[in-house]
Length: 179
Image (spheres, rainbow, N blue to C red):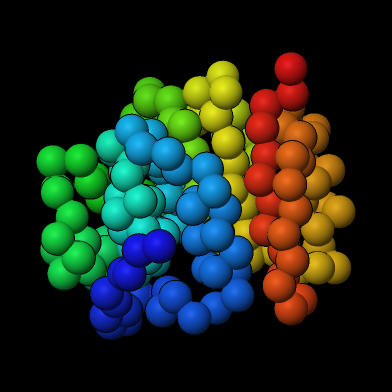
């Protein structure tokens, strides 16, 4: 168990939302030390910071909002994160091809996307390009009524749900590449 100190400032993510708790529980289960993690839509940085504190070797936090990037950096510092293994980038992985190519030039053990169903569905074609062959996707921010749509989009792009967690009206999905 790790404690993450947070000052969300103007960025999204206080750590109290059910989707954040679902993602943190999955991270705790799948980080064993030494992983590379990509947090798409990092907001305040809570999940990428938690991943680092749990033992991820390299953590990449990306967001379209410059304020979120600044807040994530401040929160990483507040938590004593070694910035030689914690990287923050500002850009839109969906609409900025150059940014997407730069980010997808690496492969990650775990890709985090605690956003909303619409964005996860739009992001689904890009996700496999970001994952190592045995990598995992942890996606949340999915309202229960939208779960089937998200699962269909992931499957259409070569990803299969391995685990689904529930909390209140929210769902989180752990997915892996289909063999």
